[in-house]
Length: 454
Image 1 (cartoon, one colour):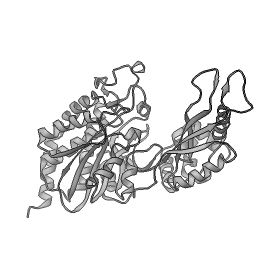
Image 2 (tube, rainbow, N blue to C red):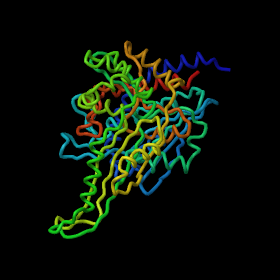
Image 3 (cartoon, rainbow, N blue to C red):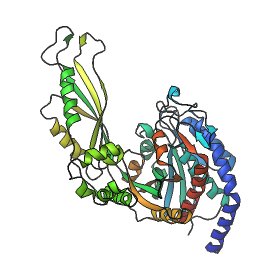
Image 4 (cartoon, rainbow, N blue to C red):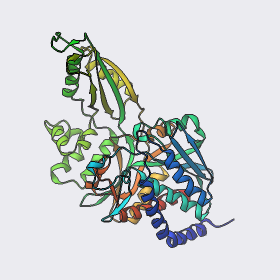
């Protein structure tokens, strides 16, 4: 029997020799990947599948592909290992739209400039996808026995809910997830706040509850308004929602986030972050927090944003129907059914129909797992003085699907991104630091290696 210590030492030597080459390859792959148009809608993620197929073919890696609909491609590959529950490297290949006129570069060019690689998906999440690819190929090339299977999984449609991607795969290809116990996805990472580097591991997320509201009334000519109309009814409904404040509550995972932030916060916020359950009860605090940081404020309560509405298609026609769509996000300590009961009660005196467009279940992944501990260990070793904190995402990722399966799922990419760069995600001039990306590639490989080698 081969001594595992010798194998691991051999692996570390090979890693040191080849680290530069895998980083160089990753930069080349990312530039190429950003040129592939997978903007959702419509997605066309099969283009990304073709990109990965060429790489896997060149590496001699077997893979499987499946389209959930024409052009909505998914691809996965597996390195066989021992009997420990499998580890899944999960990424989505679709990106959100980018308006060329507001960018200083072509968002689909993958341009290198000023030490950055620019393009839609450079931070969300084609960069992470390439880091995962680099890790997967490194494990394959070294051919050192693993203690578990490692699955590479690139999917469609996350930006629109994941129903043509992970949601569809769970229903149609459940074998991908069989005996999987750990999963790493987007949702967390490193941030330097000017004082220290903090690595946030997403362990849970606010639950989306997307609603469509409809009001109806007598239509007519714009010159002869009735006492009420579908439009005026909807105005009253939306005004009720706009002026409603959902009660604040600090759940344990959110309390952990703020407690961690208190360690490096300035004096204005440190005491409040250290005891948020008390702070949210202070008059004016939540309004002040919302102005300071809408994302932090969103962690303290359920929220609803009015995002879409429509009525007549002519200025002189009073329509029979008006609609609006509401993006609600609830803290993961209760069900969407409980929230809907409260929301319906809020509008109980209004003549409005409420339809659920989408609602997920809530779940929290434990901080006591081999993957979580590996992230703590490796980031501590490779970034002295840094620290790790659990994170709660105000947005959603495909991890909600896999948490429903009982898979301990974490949002994490070790790349360190300055706070000011986060506004580029889903925004204009999205970009990633080349140096940061290269280091993130090797950091991720070190983390996954700590999990898969005994």
